[in-house]
Length: 307
Image (cartoon, rainbow, N blue to C red; front, side, top):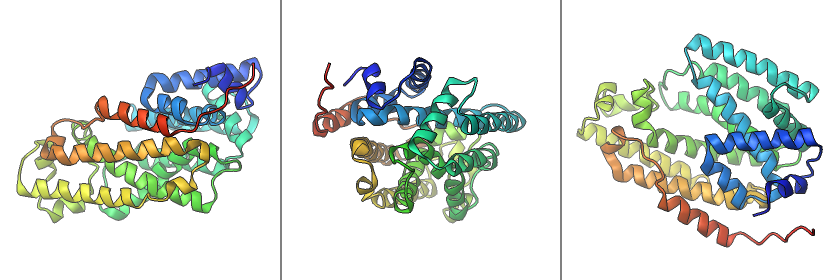
């Protein structure tokens, strides 16, 4: 793995202030999400890493504002952040080094600003005021408004000029699967925080109440509901087949790893059954390490830059 300085140079990022901005963004991601950061550093082609680190840092920043505080505080925070982002995209400058790095990535890689605008709007209209889903259509609307633009503002810089329609649709299928798995894995924590992420119509189909889930009641209806949700997640994962053909070559090892980890986590959810209502289902330690090791072994060797 090349040093961070070499990685920045390989990506063509020059100038002391700009390199410091990208370094700030990368450190922020490392502190908040060490596993995704290390996956990028170990598996992504070095010229892509700074762009994607800035993208992930920006996505996390918006998520944090949309999920922290009272509804009024979230709304005010997103309005202020949105204004800062728009200024950064228009001028290339900002008091915030993360926004400076991301604005530079968007401009340099040609990611259409429409995706950023959609993500910010979705944060305000779908995430900050989230009160659950009524049915599948409501869930799909959430993906379109927030989760899909979110994954594009992160992964989109892999494509010069941004993703085309087919590539964007591939990531839409990917985020459908990722969101279903994430909601199932985080059921216990979400319920404890007052968030119900399974559509209410599906609870009714199985004669399950919200209280049944909050109390982790082991009933036939609860077991059937969880099994049905896991089955939907399995189908969504199967629908991501072909994402590698739509991914930039330098990011394919990361996409493989992300998919394998989703499959591992979903299997753990299925094994946990009603236990997933009592404790969030993580990746564990061994499986991610094995997955990273396999992916690292499959990844083509990157020639060392001349000294």
